[in-house]
Image (cartoon, rainbow, N blue to C red):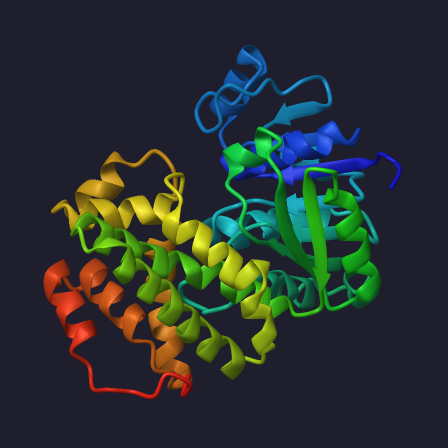
Length: 343
């Protein structure tokens, strides 16, 4: 793919890492920061010291807090906004998109009140735009997979998946991100990829809790395995393909998030297991741990779809009902016996 014009919306660690990746391929990248103060600091310091320090931005990246300046005329728009603010920003960006723009969500979450994934949020906003011929020209996609921002910025070998319902759009997203150190697979299973990316954060909180309690690697392995069963169960009920959850956006992302020290969601669980309250943990955190909000959304979604998700139930109890972590683990372990293959 020839170098082009790309907007990355969201200057957190992940958005910055993707901007560095794309600029390294020769694309001209506009990186949008929500706060003018952050944008100014990044311009003056030449890096994102708040969220991804130590990586010079270079001349291929223009940082701005002006959404119109970031989006206008850009062939590709990468939405790297946390799920709780995703709709509001996309709604503002929508009338600024060029006809035929390709927009890809790099966020991992489920909207709290609507229980929609981010691609569903974008589709809903496009449908409400009132200009069918124009809105139908916009192509949507999602990106997910085991990918810590810092390791991507370092250029460490990484593999991810992009998905779009339109095969040609998926191919173009694949080409947009692909490098020798950032391998990109393509898929048509948009909902499966999004659910895998969102729900693995909940299991990572559970894994962190068990690590904080000192329960060892046997426990962590069990949680990862049964967590994958829960994710697959809900995903299939919502129309996803089962095999998607055996891939990078399912098992791959789940293993990384449940075991990696850079995982913010695992760190939340780790501190819960060590005795801190969720209020204290969130107050001390500098960056967003998507799994906390996603737990509430997923809990409501599982109840709506009548899907049994015992790990989710216990994490919800800890985060939103002040359930003691040891009691949550005990209740999980003493459930009635099941057949493993009965997902």
